[in-house]
Length: 254
Image (tube, rainbow, N blue to C red; front, top):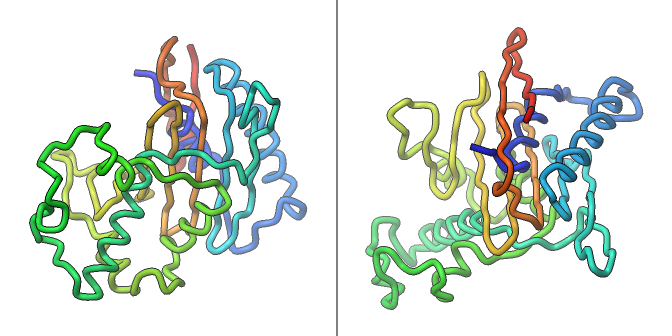
Protein backbone atom coordinates (compact mmCIF):
# COMPACT_ATOMS: atom_id res chain seq x y z
CA UNK A 1 0.00 0.00 0.00
CA UNK A 2 1.25 3.45 -0.89
CA UNK A 3 2.37 5.44 2.16
CA UNK A 4 1.49 9.16 2.37
CA UNK A 5 4.46 11.48 1.99
CA UNK A 6 3.97 12.75 5.55
CA UNK A 7 4.86 9.28 6.90
CA UNK A 8 7.80 8.89 4.52
CA UNK A 9 9.23 12.26 5.57
CA UNK A 10 9.07 11.28 9.24
CA UNK A 11 10.89 8.01 8.53
CA UNK A 12 13.45 9.75 6.31
CA UNK A 13 14.29 12.37 8.97
CA UNK A 14 14.60 9.83 11.76
CA UNK A 15 16.82 7.60 9.60
CA UNK A 16 19.02 10.32 8.13
CA UNK A 17 19.57 13.06 10.69
CA UNK A 18 21.52 12.82 13.92
CA UNK A 19 21.21 15.71 16.36
CA UNK A 20 23.45 16.71 19.23
CA UNK A 21 23.29 19.40 21.87
CA UNK A 22 24.62 21.90 19.32
CA UNK A 23 22.53 22.06 16.16
CA UNK A 24 23.68 24.66 13.64
CA UNK A 25 23.57 24.20 9.89
CA UNK A 26 26.17 26.93 9.44
CA UNK A 27 28.64 25.11 11.70
CA UNK A 28 27.79 21.64 10.38
CA UNK A 29 28.41 21.29 6.62
CA UNK A 30 27.42 17.61 6.70
CA UNK A 31 24.01 18.45 8.19
CA UNK A 32 23.55 21.32 5.74
CA UNK A 33 24.33 18.95 2.86
CA UNK A 34 21.74 16.46 4.10
CA UNK A 35 19.12 19.23 4.32
CA UNK A 36 19.85 20.27 0.71
CA UNK A 37 19.49 16.67 -0.46
CA UNK A 38 16.34 16.29 1.64
CA UNK A 39 14.75 19.34 0.01
CA UNK A 40 15.40 17.95 -3.47
CA UNK A 41 13.87 14.62 -2.40
CA UNK A 42 10.75 16.41 -1.13
CA UNK A 43 10.35 18.32 -4.40
CA UNK A 44 10.74 15.11 -6.43
CA UNK A 45 8.18 13.30 -4.29
CA UNK A 46 5.71 16.18 -4.56
CA UNK A 47 5.96 16.15 -8.34
CA UNK A 48 5.63 12.36 -8.48
CA UNK A 49 2.62 12.33 -6.16
CA UNK A 50 0.88 15.46 -7.45
CA UNK A 51 1.10 17.35 -4.15
CA UNK A 52 0.27 21.04 -4.48
CA UNK A 53 1.65 22.38 -1.21
CA UNK A 54 3.64 21.12 1.75
CA UNK A 55 5.07 22.72 4.88
CA UNK A 56 7.50 20.95 7.19
CA UNK A 57 9.45 21.66 10.35
CA UNK A 58 12.04 19.88 12.49
CA UNK A 59 12.04 20.54 16.24
CA UNK A 60 15.00 19.89 18.49
CA UNK A 61 14.34 20.36 22.20
CA UNK A 62 12.82 23.86 22.53
CA UNK A 63 13.70 25.12 19.07
CA UNK A 64 12.31 24.90 15.55
CA UNK A 65 15.71 24.32 13.94
CA UNK A 66 14.59 24.01 10.31
CA UNK A 67 11.36 24.75 8.52
CA UNK A 68 10.30 25.38 4.95
CA UNK A 69 7.31 25.49 2.64
CA UNK A 70 7.17 23.84 -0.78
CA UNK A 71 4.74 24.40 -3.62
CA UNK A 72 1.59 26.47 -3.22
CA UNK A 73 -0.91 27.25 -0.49
CA UNK A 74 -3.16 28.46 -3.34
CA UNK A 75 -2.14 27.16 -6.76
CA UNK A 76 -4.60 29.30 -8.71
CA UNK A 77 -3.42 32.54 -7.08
CA UNK A 78 0.22 31.37 -6.98
CA UNK A 79 0.45 31.91 -3.22
CA UNK A 80 3.47 29.94 -1.96
CA UNK A 81 3.27 27.52 0.96
CA UNK A 82 5.28 28.72 3.98
CA UNK A 83 5.83 27.59 7.59
CA UNK A 84 3.00 30.01 8.53
CA UNK A 85 0.50 28.61 6.00
CA UNK A 86 -2.69 27.44 7.70
CA UNK A 87 -3.77 23.84 7.08
CA UNK A 88 -6.64 21.79 8.42
CA UNK A 89 -4.79 19.44 10.76
CA UNK A 90 -7.51 16.74 10.63
CA UNK A 91 -7.26 14.08 13.35
CA UNK A 92 -4.33 15.79 15.06
CA UNK A 93 -7.22 17.80 16.51
CA UNK A 94 -7.92 14.81 18.76
CA UNK A 95 -4.70 15.42 20.70
CA UNK A 96 -5.87 18.94 21.57
CA UNK A 97 -9.26 17.60 22.63
CA UNK A 98 -7.51 15.03 24.82
CA UNK A 99 -5.43 17.80 26.40
CA UNK A 100 -8.57 19.84 27.13
CA UNK A 101 -10.27 16.81 28.71
CA UNK A 102 -7.27 16.28 31.01
CA UNK A 103 -7.39 19.95 32.00
CA UNK A 104 -11.06 19.51 32.96
CA UNK A 105 -10.23 16.35 34.88
CA UNK A 106 -7.45 18.12 36.81
CA UNK A 107 -9.86 20.93 37.72
CA UNK A 108 -12.36 18.39 39.06
CA UNK A 109 -15.01 18.95 36.38
CA UNK A 110 -15.08 15.38 35.08
CA UNK A 111 -13.63 11.89 35.41
CA UNK A 112 -11.96 10.06 32.56
CA UNK A 113 -14.26 7.09 33.02
CA UNK A 114 -17.48 9.16 32.94
CA UNK A 115 -19.94 8.13 30.20
CA UNK A 116 -19.63 10.54 27.28
CA UNK A 117 -23.38 11.18 27.07
CA UNK A 118 -23.23 12.68 30.55
CA UNK A 119 -21.66 15.77 28.97
CA UNK A 120 -22.65 15.35 25.31
CA UNK A 121 -26.23 14.07 25.38
CA UNK A 122 -26.51 14.37 21.59
CA UNK A 123 -23.68 11.89 21.09
CA UNK A 124 -23.94 8.20 20.47
CA UNK A 125 -21.45 5.38 20.30
CA UNK A 126 -20.49 5.64 16.63
CA UNK A 127 -21.33 9.20 15.55
CA UNK A 128 -21.37 10.08 11.88
CA UNK A 129 -18.09 11.58 10.72
CA UNK A 130 -20.06 14.37 9.06
CA UNK A 131 -21.91 15.31 12.26
CA UNK A 132 -20.74 18.90 12.80
CA UNK A 133 -20.96 18.64 16.59
CA UNK A 134 -18.52 15.75 16.64
CA UNK A 135 -16.33 16.78 13.71
CA UNK A 136 -14.73 19.91 15.19
CA UNK A 137 -13.10 18.33 18.28
CA UNK A 138 -12.16 15.22 16.30
CA UNK A 139 -10.79 16.56 13.03
CA UNK A 140 -11.59 20.18 12.23
CA UNK A 141 -8.94 22.38 13.86
CA UNK A 142 -6.47 24.36 11.75
CA UNK A 143 -2.88 25.35 12.45
CA UNK A 144 0.55 25.91 10.91
CA UNK A 145 4.01 24.39 11.27
CA UNK A 146 5.32 27.23 13.46
CA UNK A 147 2.55 26.82 16.04
CA UNK A 148 2.57 23.02 15.97
CA UNK A 149 6.33 23.11 16.57
CA UNK A 150 5.64 24.88 19.88
CA UNK A 151 3.06 22.20 20.66
CA UNK A 152 5.64 19.48 20.01
CA UNK A 153 8.21 21.26 22.21
CA UNK A 154 5.65 21.19 25.01
CA UNK A 155 5.11 17.45 24.50
CA UNK A 156 8.86 16.80 24.63
CA UNK A 157 9.72 19.02 27.60
CA UNK A 158 6.47 19.82 29.42
CA UNK A 159 7.61 23.37 30.21
CA UNK A 160 4.19 25.00 30.04
CA UNK A 161 1.18 25.83 32.22
CA UNK A 162 -1.07 23.91 29.80
CA UNK A 163 -0.80 20.62 31.76
CA UNK A 164 0.84 19.63 35.01
CA UNK A 165 4.00 17.58 34.56
CA UNK A 166 2.48 14.47 36.12
CA UNK A 167 -0.62 14.84 33.91
CA UNK A 168 1.56 15.03 30.81
CA UNK A 169 3.35 11.85 31.91
CA UNK A 170 -0.07 10.23 32.42
CA UNK A 171 -1.07 11.30 28.91
CA UNK A 172 2.01 9.62 27.41
CA UNK A 173 1.60 6.38 29.33
CA UNK A 174 0.75 3.40 27.11
CA UNK A 175 -2.82 2.22 27.72
CA UNK A 176 -3.35 -0.19 24.83
CA UNK A 177 -0.96 -2.26 22.73
CA UNK A 178 -1.28 -4.26 19.54
CA UNK A 179 -0.72 -8.02 19.94
CA UNK A 180 2.77 -7.65 18.40
CA UNK A 181 3.68 -5.09 21.12
CA UNK A 182 5.20 -2.71 18.56
CA UNK A 183 2.46 -0.06 18.49
CA UNK A 184 -0.45 1.12 20.57
CA UNK A 185 -2.22 4.11 22.05
CA UNK A 186 -1.67 6.64 24.79
CA UNK A 187 -4.32 9.19 25.81
CA UNK A 188 -4.96 10.83 22.44
CA UNK A 189 -1.63 9.82 20.89
CA UNK A 190 -0.36 6.80 19.00
CA UNK A 191 2.94 5.14 19.91
CA UNK A 192 5.18 2.78 17.96
CA UNK A 193 8.71 1.41 17.79
CA UNK A 194 10.97 2.48 14.91
CA UNK A 195 14.27 0.66 15.34
CA UNK A 196 15.50 1.58 18.81
CA UNK A 197 13.33 4.69 19.03
CA UNK A 198 9.91 5.02 20.62
CA UNK A 199 7.89 7.41 18.45
CA UNK A 200 4.76 9.20 19.64
CA UNK A 201 2.65 10.52 16.79
CA UNK A 202 -0.71 11.37 15.30
CA UNK A 203 -1.73 11.79 11.69
CA UNK A 204 -4.83 12.99 9.94
CA UNK A 205 -6.66 13.13 6.64
CA UNK A 206 -9.73 15.23 5.91
CA UNK A 207 -11.05 17.26 2.98
CA UNK A 208 -7.93 17.21 0.79
CA UNK A 209 -5.45 17.62 3.66
CA UNK A 210 -2.98 15.07 5.00
CA UNK A 211 -0.99 15.79 8.15
CA UNK A 212 1.42 14.18 10.59
CA UNK A 213 3.21 15.16 13.81
CA UNK A 214 5.73 12.84 15.47
CA UNK A 215 8.28 13.13 18.24
CA UNK A 216 10.80 11.12 20.23
CA UNK A 217 11.12 12.51 23.76
CA UNK A 218 14.35 10.62 24.46
CA UNK A 219 16.14 12.21 21.51
CA UNK A 220 14.17 15.48 21.86
CA UNK A 221 13.35 15.37 18.14
CA UNK A 222 9.98 16.37 16.68
CA UNK A 223 8.68 16.62 13.12
CA UNK A 224 5.63 18.40 11.68
CA UNK A 225 4.43 17.69 8.12
CA UNK A 226 1.34 19.41 6.66
CA UNK A 227 0.08 18.98 3.09
CA UNK A 228 -2.93 20.28 1.17
CA UNK A 229 -3.26 17.23 -1.07
CA UNK A 230 -4.35 13.64 -0.54
CA UNK A 231 -1.38 11.76 -2.00
CA UNK A 232 -2.36 8.25 -0.93
CA UNK A 233 -4.50 7.62 -4.02
CA UNK A 234 -3.27 6.85 -7.50
CA UNK A 235 -0.13 5.04 -8.55
CA UNK A 236 1.31 2.74 -5.90
CA UNK A 237 4.88 2.76 -4.65
CA UNK A 238 6.94 0.23 -2.78
CA UNK A 239 8.86 1.14 0.36
CA UNK A 240 12.04 -0.58 1.38
CA UNK A 241 13.64 -0.21 4.80
CA UNK A 242 17.28 -1.21 4.78
CA UNK A 243 19.11 -1.63 8.06
CA UNK A 244 22.56 -0.06 8.12
CA UNK A 245 24.41 -0.68 11.38
CA UNK A 246 22.18 0.53 14.21
CA UNK A 247 20.28 2.96 11.99
CA UNK A 248 17.64 2.60 9.31
CA UNK A 249 17.52 4.22 5.90
CA UNK A 250 14.39 4.48 3.80
CA UNK A 251 14.29 4.16 0.02
CA UNK A 252 11.26 4.65 -2.17
CA UNK A 253 11.01 3.08 -5.61
CA UNK A 254 8.28 2.46 -8.17
